[in-house]
Amino acid sequence: MLLRQGYHALGIAAVLEATKIPKGSFYHHFESKEDFGLKVIDLYMEGVHAGLDQCLQDKSLPPLLRVRRFFEATEEKYRTEGYLGCLLGGLGQELSGINDAFRRKVEHCFSEIARRITGCLREAVKRGDLPKKTDPQKMAELLVNCWEGAALRTRMRRDPAPLRDMLDFYFRSAST
Amino acid sequence: MLLRQGYHALGIAAVLEATKIPKGSFYHHFESKEDFGLKVIDLYMEGVHAGLDQCLQDKSLPPLLRVRRFFEATEEKYRTEGYLGCLLGGLGQELSGINDAFRRKVEHCFSEIARRITGCLREAVKRGDLPKKTDPQKMAELLVNCWEGAALRTRMRRDPAPLRDMLDFYFRSAST
DNA sequence: TACGAATTAGACCGATTGGTCTAATCCTGC
DNA sequence: GCAGGATTAGACCAATCGGTCTAATTCGTA
Image (cartoon, rainbow over all chains, first blue to last red; front, side, top):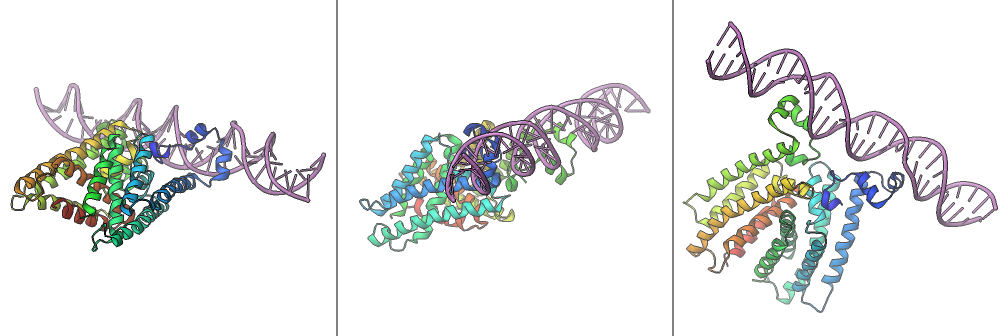
């Protein structure tokens, strides 16, 4: 609901109605709507890290392909949600101008994802799958950022093409 | 104000206070808050198109460099605003899930920007600055999308580095 | 079984929101 | 200079929001 409607457009009442949870319970477990939103991000990130675990540690694949598989799996997840893009991008854009807790949290999530991808790219450089002069960290940040842009466009168009085109371009370019 | 606070967090009252315009005037000129927001996007796009006019038609520069100059000028504009990213990305993310008028409008703006850049890239292919096999439209869409992602990250970090790294990567990769 | 803590339940609240309304005022063309 | 539409002015409104409160109930443990 937070992904589809965004933070402000999603009322607590709608969450309670959808989950059949009374207001007393909600405010017993969550300090506030902000606390709720931040914890939804935590939950979202559990899924992201599970996906990273699964893909990036698959030693049967070369490291570069592992990274690609992660994003392809993410695209598949987007599909099941109706191509609404990424929750981090959505909440980050909406709230980072008025709420530093969200801004920091989202930035931290991005940098964590990039950090894990950096490791895989470093391995790819070592194997010679990426040019020796490649800066793994910069390339990982770049991938995450461009992915988010493609995800935004996907949200506008309800169409996965921007995600695919972006991955094609990135992996073709990175390895030369 | 829309860029910093987003659509929902920005109240009409705050706009009226900041501009010293009474509510009667506002609702005489705008049908609703939605109408207001859509017209702010129109105004924003006037600036974007002015920038495109200025950069993309500068025949003293090779076409690829003209495109790059446009984005560098855009980065400079972001700087004056405190690195809050792009209004299209902000409103697009926040509203596209609940308001089709905004979703279509923002998507239209993106595709218009990409369309104009496509022309410049086509010229670059013709001159041999880009490989013959390059698909100018795909490359233009890609550039716009990745730019938006970098702009989002810039908003999270209040730092222009993601924009610069993205441009560096794109123009280095595109021309090979 | 009994007792205290955790949780549920939802009526209720003040604040704020986008939007309306009517009267006053301004501006323009005759 | 006057007639009449355009615009200004801001008090006002219903609806909705996040959040509080207290009483009832459930749960875990001794």
